[in-house]
Length: 110
Ligand SMILES: [Zn+2]
Ligand SMILES: [Zn+2]
Image (cartoon, rainbow, N blue to C red; front, side, top):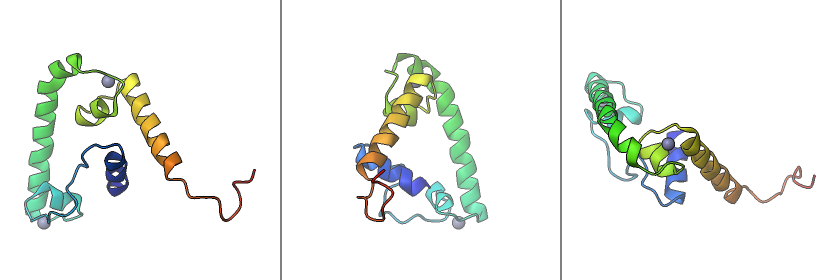
């Protein structure tokens, strides 16, 4: 699920949430994202989320200044205003349209 999302981000020229090739070690939130639920990774994740929430609170100000209606704002700032959601939806749709498989097994000819 998140891998698909990363593909979308890459296709949009944005950075994926996780570097592809760097191995994650226990105690890193990436390891948690990769599915590990050991105590170290859970703790790292918990800290990350707390951090993220705190930074979001700090970013309230920034959010008032950034341009809305962009996927960057949607993703980087976690903005879910109507303009940003629409931008994200459009980007996802464009991505899907671009990556739609050529019609082979019928169903595309009406
Ligand atoms: Zn772990
Ligand atoms: Zn917004």
